[in-house]
Length: 323
Ligand code: UDP
Image (cartoon, rainbow, N blue to C red; front, side):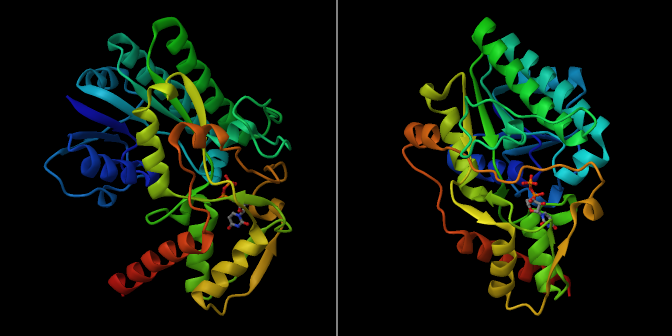
């Protein structure tokens, strides 16, 4: 028996795979379609098996889940840009794929971790967001809210399997997560700012930059995910997984500029220039992590500069290797 990680070549997935190989000594099976994942992200190990496939291929999902003693379901269309540009693909992967994984797991009672997202809170202003808070979602004409609803549907489906079929499930709502190997291509702010700063290009702050986010180091994210899956009290519950320390995007840009000693200017780009007229995003996003802390007994490190330094060091190494 093995541990299945769907989306295991992606940013969070590849760190989780690495962690599982080291911490559990078990074999790990990765399913990824390499749409955003990269094979080079995965470590060399004779306990690692890689399957290049689609999470919406129901038959193959059933086979893979049958071989596994637990499933970490991280395969999803991620990144605001991708979700906005390819809404159909995002909805298909996030709704159908999760349904196939959960149905297959329910057939054998295989425990599943379901990766959800802080996007499910939508544009709620009730900071910090608690797991049982109301969600505030915008109109169906804005693709971003389709992603939020797809992830919410995944949660409903997982919880329904838990209630009706006793399926062991843990749902993690990832807040902004950051660390080595995250790429800026799909719009994520920290790799984008770091790349811009290292190239001395303008750092592009969208809107007026007063919006706030919290950032958690991916090493801690995967540790939390693994611990939750092994904690009986977490079964059947939803957890915010994120840091509780907020930073404005203006402040973030300045910190990246300082830490890289960059000559970059900081430029404000109106949202409608960066995206479409109808683009919407939450002004503030911060998790209430009481439940996470009470269940795990620890909270994420709040030192943003340390996280940034880790990302900057990796990018500098990349530049040196490729030049
Ligand atoms: N952002 C920015 N410049 C960029 C990319 C993102 O100012 O080049 C902002 C974005 O508008 C948001 C924040 O940074 O307010 C975080 O963006 P990201 O896409 O990383 O995650 P989100 O929180 O939107 O899911």
